[in-house]
Image (cartoon, rainbow, N blue to C red; front, side):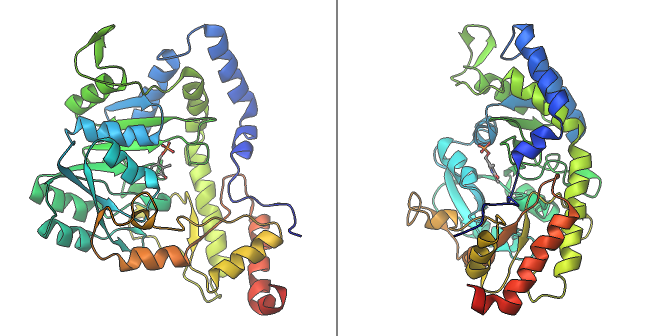
Length: 379
Ligand SMILES: *Cc1c(COP(=O)(O)O)cnc(C)c1O
């Protein structure tokens, strides 16, 4: 019998309890206001988030997948267009491309940073499949920024839009500029376990380009500029007032919580250093916000089972690359993806969330040490 999970892999409830009084009063404020959609809270959160990221425009939407789809549509990406991204990502990245009507083209990752390899992108752009190359979606996976300067250079050279997938990188930066400010437009998710998490669904599109911002605003609500008059065909993707009010509280604490994630990652690094496994690397000049702390341990699956038996939760991000999942297998255009396919066999995401403490990390590492010393007997 497994022990109950004592150290979960992530813990959105702890994220609520850490700010309970402020969140409860924010929710109460919205309930009492009598205004539940597209009101003052969303407007203020959009302003505060835009200021935090360092962009001119932010548009709240219903979730991160919508944020990607609306960003693509705003960039005029649709049927017959090619969008270059990675297969080592949340399926939402690829799903959003198809929801916009376009064709995903998947390229390999750089195994050190787990993000798009610019050389693989360059190769794919040199021999594109049928269709019109239109856009690139780099994913700042696990909180580590993709190599934006190389990707932007290729985008400029080929006249492509760049849509950053920032669903895992709230607050991460390259130099002094945060992710979300590098491309033409960027998509964020506020799914509860993200670094900036709502207590429900939420998403945001950010951009410095006023025309793109205007198009997202139209697409987001029935193509309305003026109420009841659809200027273009649109849909419904709104961030609600309660989630916006909660996210305003969370945003005020994001830098502090990201620093805590970095401190926890450094603790893991120091304690795991002498074991034979690959630890996460950070490219020089970037700020990694450790949405996940991802190791490549020997005998990964046995280690994972053992940790579960002793009450420690882990996850695999992601167990199957998108192009090999049933919905996509044999259907997508992919280059050779050796690193992607190898990575999914190797990675393990250890517990990390701001309310985790260094004692718990010590306990986790002791269990890992025990597994490798004694693991043959224990599993
Ligand atoms: C979470 C996530 C999304 C999708 O966000 P939702 O809010 O769940 O729709 C997209 N891309 C990546 C990389 C993600 O991690």
